[in-house]
Image (cartoon, rainbow, N blue to C red):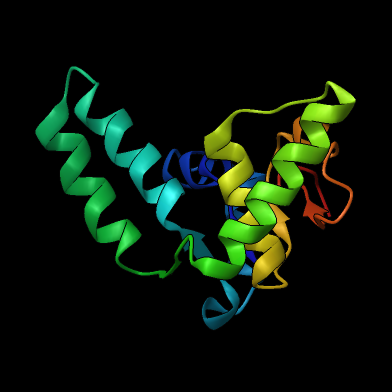
Length: 132
């Protein structure tokens, strides 16, 4: 299961439902994408407490296997972006890259942004913000 940036942030902030749900998943079944890592690093560098946030985020991100935007995910991205564009239901490229990586690796995406990602029919979505 790939953890989206919002889930990673909720986890870092200690949101109880998210923490409980994430801890139920064996660590070797949890992944992040390079895009999620970049988003969290950007957030830390854009904050008023840069060093403090980086000191928390970098070791946290190192706990996960990072899935990359490889050739297969790139092809999924291009095909999906074209389809969404034709329907007039575009989503931001960074989110679309995350979804493409999830689809290419046949992994569900854990996110609280379900309405946004539901536009991508091939993507399996799990909301870890909901009580079990």
